[in-house]
Length: 301
Image 1: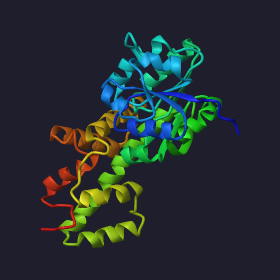
Image 2: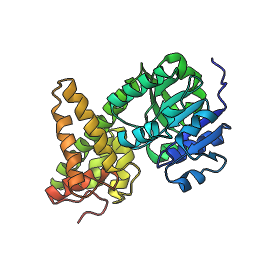
Image 3: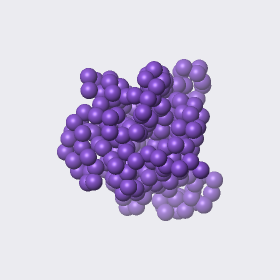
């Protein structure tokens, strides 16, 4: 077991996920330095020190974490005139918990190597609730020994850490995971719609599904919100759509034929086109409802 020597942790990106993650680092006893483009969000992290630029994090912390929404936001934090790469050095370990392209992840690994800094790609799943409660699942790519050195930092924010392989393999795993979660929920919902149109009560459908091979973790987690008509975002549909575009890019790059994946990519884009971008991604249920004249809820008309 490697003893923790890391005491100072920087965090860039205090958004839906980063706010809970950074609070858990403070709670775990680290000296936490935070940066966010919208400063009041950073100032809301009690017990953390707010810095003015991403670059400042490198001088104050051994480990610098990032969690932002897309490639463009990540490039801004990294490569702006006061970005992280302007100050990153061999004393730093950079950890990216965003879900971004494999190409950008590989690029970051290369830039870090040029500066003598270590790098882990460590995207997460678990949503806003997992970030707040410190129960995220981490998928980690990079050197195994660097991962072990940072284990206590990551364990302050996550309950399960999966080492996936060298750099980019954490990101590859996350892209495959998000694709799978959407495919599974869509298939479950389609079965629910069939059952409803056959005249079956919603409680009967769910009891049968959830006590058979049709039971799924994502449906167990998401169906209560769908049944209660609660589409308030814990993970935006526009972000799931972005992740599916990343998956589609990898599928095409690898010349794979994945018909259900292809259909699900189109479904997420349809949700965007229908104005559901700012709702939770489970709003894909609304698309099925509209097409089949049915409502997936506890109160059946």
